[in-house]
Length: 349
Image (cartoon, rainbow, N blue to C red; front, side):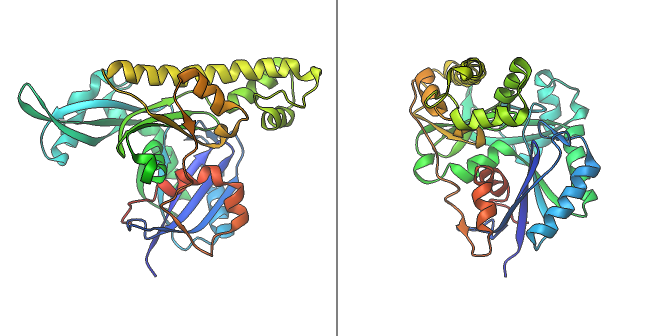
């Protein structure tokens, strides 16, 4: 049997893991998928803050899911990760990576020695007649990444790679017709929202917005003194639709509309920034994913605000689903599958 690798996604109150066989082949196979709840304080906006609790949960996860490998790929993608466009003189990739610290200090919010740097090449062009490589600079706060890796190692697992969550989403979802032309992949998580512009299947722009679906819950709890479970129920049951709701819920809808409006505006402004920085550029469609995208009426609100068609992408169409996959786990955690599985795609581990 071909070797497998597990993609690990650390979310608010949950860890998701996907074991994929033949990750570097044209038709990889999902052989196991499982998620396990953790205290919401254990992971804060993607940062592991309670390593012992997370390590213990990972051990339980491996037992419950029956994963057959300890090789894992860890996903990062929160406010402590910066992704920016960068053009560098043409040279071998190893030389580009060596020179990054000298080229990016001015765009980093922290000293270079406190960041982990990488470069994702996108295209080769000419600048004043000289060849340059344009691409995406990825800078992650070293402390944040190391805390996650240490928790994984404490669970006796082997982290073989650390990858950017937006790239994982792109590998998982931007395939086939979805990859044609220029599309914006908008992934709404509990605490952050990812906006990625893909041009003919190549990521060209990434922003991580500090708004997520849990902003609605927090607003309902703090402004209306709701219990967290009640806030979650109202959000899931009604979203932006008042159909079937009593007059007593009017204050709740006002809060939901305001919090959702903030997220929609943040997404629209991000797309406007991209378009204004690229004369002649267009975005043909928005592909909406993530658990927060299921909010009733959100897709329509985003389409109205941006005047761009919005639809859902296919759910990791590249993957074959093996009979060994727990269908109940898959159904409950389907919104989280693209990140966990996408982390593994292309890996030769």
